[in-house]
Length: 161
Image 1 (cartoon, one colour):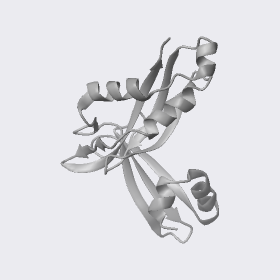
Image 2 (cartoon, one colour):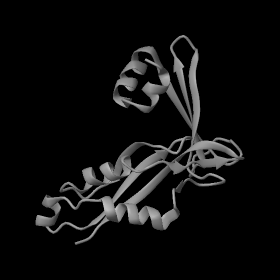
Image 3 (tube, helix red, strand yellow):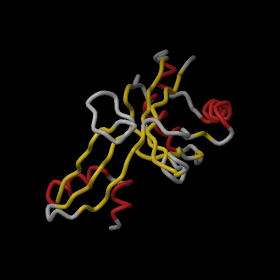
């Protein structure tokens, strides 16, 4: 398996592999690439095999010079969500309303990856939020110094009756 496929795919399998063959080191960095314990600017991730060989080094940015943009802008994103989201029947029946917070990565090619719920409301809303985020079309990627980078985003998905 190509390491790029493993990195963006089944993280549980990758973690199990690394426990026997290596480790993942993460360091939170400030804008000057200095380690910080406070709110980071980005995170450097290094995959190291037990032999000492570095398999991959990457960074995920929380803030970029040019943040990722949904194609067509913010209004187009809200229109996309409004048009494509399906209110779960269980949530409707239980009169559940609120916001589900989804964290995801906009990759260098603009695709959405590694979506996960950071705060949910249940009754099918969490699953629907993941479905809608994962099905988004490609974004314009984030950029640092003119180069496309991975950017982590946390976005609320609002459910209102």
